[in-house]
Length: 392
Image 1 (cartoon, rainbow, N blue to C red):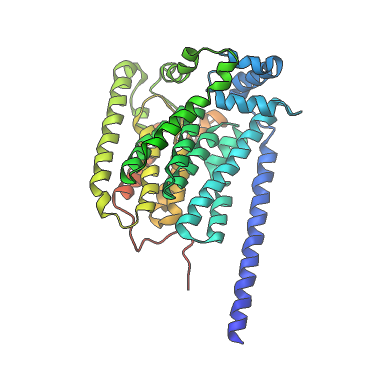
Image 2 (cartoon, rainbow, N blue to C red):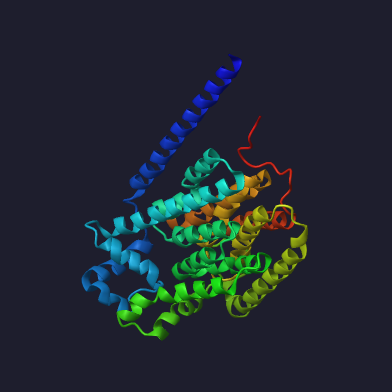
């Protein structure tokens, strides 16, 4: 009789959990719908005009350099622009769809590493409420969820030891935003540690090149397409654009020497970390968890030490730090701090107010980055307590 009561209580708790998840999912959709009418200067000065060009010229517009984004995102603007909705709605719908793709990837990783459907579901729905995710897409209408969703799914397939999907998804992430390159060292490490196939790399490169085919068919030259990312990298002449990183403490007057030195510094630090990871790889007890930790470390470290970064470039790192939190409670403070620094960094542009001066925010960002990197070097512990640990 007592056993039957316990069984009924567990069933009731499960029903309650799923009901709360349904409410959370409905709220995630509703809050994005509510924020839909908000627009920013990025939409007014850039994306609005791009959509107008695509609606006026159709597919032929891809033969011109009417936008400074790589073609895949512009393809989405074209396709969703065919719908009878205004331009701002086009941008917000795309952003919201990739929010959900990102959440599904977080849920998939959580399920693979925790083995619990309910924990995976809570992780997925919870990802929709990560402050930076909600602000970036719902309020700003930015596209960082697009490439980050592909990166998260690439992480999932690395954990599943499926190298071809992992490289294909990374290639798609890179085709949307150059900032996906921050995780290139992580994928290279996975290639070595898992003895992945060169065929997977070749297929990934092929997929990246295929994303240019529609634009080529529309008449755009290969040289013009190849120069998009180069122009983005060279077109910004400030050490930082509201990014709470190392260059908040360096004046812009030193841009010429410091920018070049900063790139060299970043390459050196990444190379050193790779050596340390390779040295310690043989002693890791939980290699799957460790690979997620390494991904988070590179995603927060690289934008901190590289010059010419925007505040949004820590986006993937913030998401991956929260994924690590699901596996190890030691990530609680750095994961929270990364979200706090994101909101404080967004505030000057989105809210037209400086809550905390960014050089001070960079101090907290430094502490967060150091914590995430140190945790990745300390190895996942067998006795590490995950968030939502199951109690007997």
